[in-house]
Image (cartoon, rainbow, N blue to C red; front, side, top):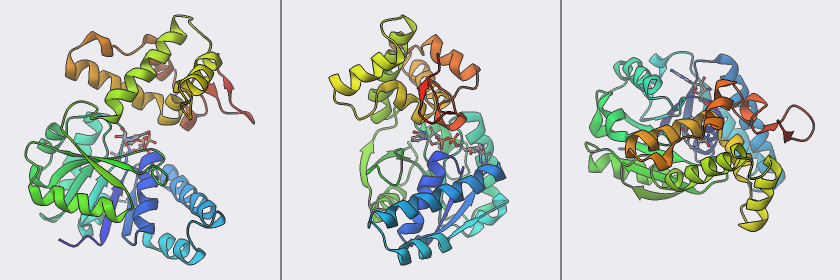
Length: 291
Ligand code: NAD
């Protein structure tokens, strides 16, 4: 199977980034989001990020112009009938993803592959919500997609060998390094990373240190490029909570209990950078701890 057209559903932080790398690698890209505002802002972000790459000499102006021309937005899922692969990057909520697959599948030819960018959900269970479990798998890109090299590739129980091989080859053409991961909650990166972030939130909750103290400690003491609270804001606190819930429920172990403070922030709509406020407040010139 030859992939020429990629469909990307969900044009948030991840979908926009995936569209960016697919277009630069020479694929036609069809991008859709339920929010037209998000779709437009994704195009503006891609534009800005590619302009930065041109400025740094990583890509030529010609590469940028060609890549931007390859990206088209789609108003409806019916347009996805011409895609060879659909990369799903909608909100990390199983009901939302299942509902999307139910609406999407009737528009797809039988050979079209679907890869979910889920951070934590069972690929086998998501696959079972489609009409093509053999042609479904996980392709978990990292944030920010244009910069991060890794993609975790996850097979569901029904994923066909050919599906895995095509997606593995495709991901390599994007300049990424695939790593094979078994279908366990949160895979590898988030299984290790999220409990660390959750523990940092517990440290804040219990008053072990302030937001600044915790982030400074981990930046200078563990040589992490970003503190864990800063990183949580960057990922999105709703996504962090959802991953912790999946670990907690999927592995039935209390050590994965989401910190109540994380739950509170999500309840408040303080989801991090994407909403302007999380552990830090991003509405001013420089981020300051929000409380
Ligand atoms: P986001 O909130 O930035 O974007 C999600 C987008 O999906 C939103 O724009 C929303 O409008 C859209 N959406 C929701 N329901 C939809 C539907 N039915 N049809 C079309 N669009 C719909 O979230 P994100 O950070 O981009 O995460 C997307 C996926 O990628 C999640 O599964 C998440 O777990 C995963 N992921 C996130 C990160 C990260 O660091 N944020 C990293 C790797 C993977």
